[in-house]
Image (tube, one colour):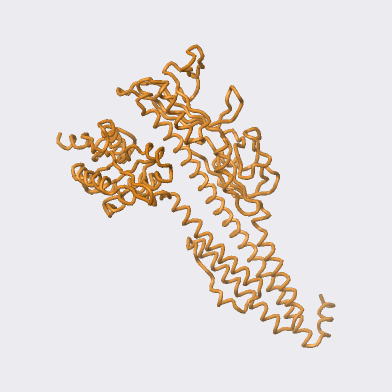
Length: 541
């Protein structure tokens, strides 16, 4: 130590000043780089986690909607008179007609009440499926969506969608089963690759890979994942550390189970990609610090100042975004004298902030809106609409719900094509949106069916509105440059009842009763309005 002080004492003031400034610059560089790298590393992990959650949430939404669309298609067959009255030949022709316009189902079958699938051409040709899960659930009068299963006959992985056929007295008449291969699921999942290495894949309940956004190396459900993410999922762990993915690279991942934990959606991005920009930035800062060390004292101080100021803006901006202000932007004028690398970093940060806000807005819009009709969807009605209904009922008001179905919509599609059918749906939605207001919420329920929730209105008031709407639909047919399509609709109305008959919440009960009234309207000749009397009769007991 004494020798070092002796050597230092022989230096001139200028050299001493340069040594002190150099030491200060080195210390300052380390004091900036180390905290900045630590904070930015956490921020990168947070951003990667948010991106992964968005991707798997959107993919889960796609899968849920895809499942519901397939199940709804099967349910429509169970309501057919051919299914109820056991006209098997006519029912199978309905299956064939549907297959001509919808190729997503590999096959659609009818299971007899005794558990056999029989040929309509050869009565002796039959197959027993009474031990299959879809028949057991159907006999319990429940719909069913399987996980990914391997067929006993061909060994091909499939998904089954089934619904029971019930008679007029709720007696069991059989089961309609639709079989879908994994091709459609592969198409859905392949849309969601992101970044250079981001990947989404789906596992079954046993950890076997079903499909992945990058299909290379993935063949059906033959490859089992033993990586950390699967163990986290089955234990509901919230650990976010890196692990070795099923492709052998260090990755960060997020997961989300589907309903009933049949499938697991996993999103992964490599550790290398997450920290690529951060490592590049760290190297840039070190280079700038080394250059500053070789420059004069004034230049070193100026460079250090120019480095530190934009970093402060970045740190402040990341904290603002952590609090939920996803569209926060850094004013470029405040760093106009900063080095080009840091300007580029801020520009990149602003672009990422803008993209993050857009992705969140898109996800929210996709979750609540029907893109075809540009009106609220069934999910919005069952969540937001139900919340407003509960508040209104708690305040002592009578409420009602109207289910509306466009008459002969399949005939419109078959006659004019699906583009005209979509135009009719959009036209009807536009008419319905005229009635929307603080006490009227309209949504597309699915297919050609719409739902209107009317707060503070009883069934009679709703029936008057339904009659007006029915006349308006007939008075305003759908038109384009070539054709005019006349529109009629059947409507079912149900009023709030104090006790539930269907479902576990008030809106589910009202929708089910209104749907039964709608069925009566369609059975009674269509272009009618029917009212469920249960809620009304209860008020007069």
